[in-house]
Image 1 (cartoon, helix red, strand yellow):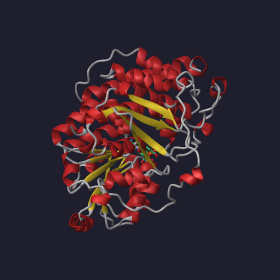
Image 2 (tube, helix red, strand yellow):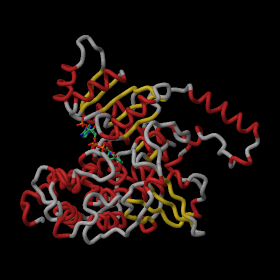
Image 3 (cartoon, rainbow, N blue to C red):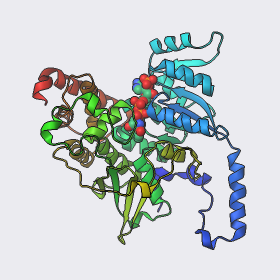
Image 4 (cartoon, helix red, strand yellow):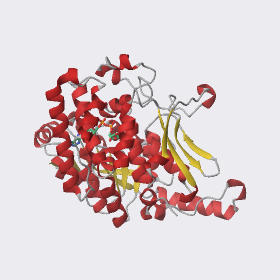
Length: 434
Ligand SMILES: NC(=O)c1ccc[n+]([C@@H]2O[C@H](COP(=O)([O-])OP(=O)(O)OC[C@H]3O[C@@H](n4cnc5c(N)ncnc54)[C@H](OP(=O)(O)O)[C@@H]3O)[C@@H](O)[C@H]2O)c1
């Protein structure tokens, strides 16, 4: 049995006969493979990139810039960083762009050379138009937060494959997104390094042979901090991730371990595995990106330097691999790979993630929405670090979960949870939530 939405029919069409182990290669097969690959090299893939100005968006454009013969950028969607977007427009010449609102669209128009004819849209409809523009072969979904849900779903409903970085989409509306992907026969290719690792480790395996999926987590900057020190964490401290250079929200999520909670839910949805067959190891070096344990006791892991261009490039060209610049993995230099059990007492967000996943229905959307509000409040100095999981837990406690009906239902639950969490932060103040 295959791996559902991850490797759907479109990817299979690109996937020529799997390579035989090298020593058994009949020479004519080898040449056939080389010929097929060289023909495919000439096919340019048209991309729409949502969240172009973010960390993943910029890394995606770095991959594109390194392989201009492989890709054309048809559309870019961003939020409010129009200065960076204007530079990207100059370099990659998309036909269509979208920004968060009309105010940002006005600022962008002023930055572009007069007389240019670029179509500039705004708001969620603008992002959806970029995602579904004629000729787009692949959408890179890399907005942050639940804002990415609607344009990602629009792409899937239009039958366009998605390279998915925006994990909040799968957390908030996993059943909807996977049902739409199945109905349209659309591939969802994970960009998250852990899920990309799982996809790679699962290649050619039978579903029934898999015992457990293991996600690795760096543990973030406070892995070894005692609980009393965690109470005094500042945004500046939490924004310094030891291994990865990422956007602010996911960096805070890594520090609370909510990122791993979101990823456990993402893995359950994407690979169709019950959440209790997904484990987490703390692996501070971030070299092993995830592992699959099989029924015979064998474990397959994927390793690489912590550089998001690797999983991004793999999702862009799956099942091919592109050569990428940068230092190779040097295990002799790294010398030690270590592993620990996560501590859910000090990092309760991980426990909340498992609870939300087991409850299912609308609960993961509530967890995600409350977390987004709490992280924003922490970054603005309105909530202490330990208040983040408190807000999430209290909001989850106030919610009666229901099966997800449709997009409108998810959006309504998202709105409710955001308002509830916001009120909680305002009413209880910083002290009662610490
Ligand atoms: N960074 C990583 O290494 C990494 C790894 C795995 C998964 N991810 C996931 O990838 C996603 C993006 O992460 P990131 O680190 O790249 O985030 P980021 O650096 O904060 O970038 C977020 C992007 O989304 C745009 N955006 C935010 N709100 C928007 C809205 N309402 N409408 C339109 N655009 C909006 C931002 O635009 P402006 O900046 O122009 O306002 C920016 O382009 C997240 O879901 C994250 O969990 C990230």
